[in-house]
Length: 496
Image (cartoon, rainbow, N blue to C red):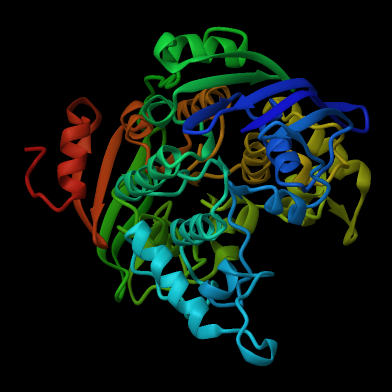
């Protein structure tokens, strides 16, 4: 269905793709895996017509094609579901799905009724009750991703490229998506599936292609591979442990949350976090975990309750006061909430320290550059230059920039919301090692994660939420997948 041969692409002196070959067959789901920075996203953008390659050839159904624009890729039958949703926030869901190809009625007026009808049909296939007239602004990441999936489905594409489509979806939503992907595959479409979740790769795909440092490494049948073999090919080494949890000395209580309530979102949430421990907030998507940590940090208002840091009350809805008290928040959506994508790597790294680095109210480039260079070295950020826009970095390196921005403030409490969402296995191990090291140095860490292995592998205590309430607290030595999931689905007393 789709054949790539010898595809190359460079950005200045950086070779993003080096002679990549890839064949996709009708009726097959094909996984593309590799560390962040391996060239997967560049390849996706070339397939989508966003960038043109420097060299190489493309064939679709045996015919040579040139994907010079997104419209050309769409006309060739290629649809892409991106890792990060790209919706127009002030347009409706239906308008986003049909942007640029709206159905027309008489006098060439847009047929809004038909758009709504076809949107409802797409969501019915997905099994989700999204309102086509709802504005895209305010949708959760999971719902935004579902709109992107509906948009790709509406194209009836022969080649469907799925770039981390499940990163923000719950287990139920993932199964729903896989049912649609299998249906498309079985109807003769070629599916290229990019994911860092190996259980998904081995469940959905018949073949796996591995990339490393912009080059093709291998393509083999899934049945002939193991997770360990794939990881070795991805990183060029053995990842000794994905969850390098250190034993730490638990210190005094640093963060106290008492009776925190935001009506209609979460209710009567109370917990403590001590220095030297990692406390995980677990639960299903929509349980209120992210909303609680955003309220603790002051991004969102709350109606009742109290937050104390080091025994001192923290005013609500005041992120500046939270930062001054020693709190740091690494948000779930790094592109929209954690970074200013148009600014440089070094400017993003120092946004939280601009006054501390300035003299007489003036920020000097030298101070900014030295601080950024130090953190880039400590976190092993891979970038062509610190002055390059942060948008040019891979997802894993962008996450490291967000971590550097907050760690440079020397916080007492580090709150990380989905710290490894959409990053590769090698970078995951690095982030886990960093969190464990910070806890070992006495920092209090609050981690929100939808990945149970991450929760069980890293947390000293697991706080489980269900429908806006904290329903269980499970110590590390008693935490397992069954106890956490039973609590997350509303069962009581499961850890007794």
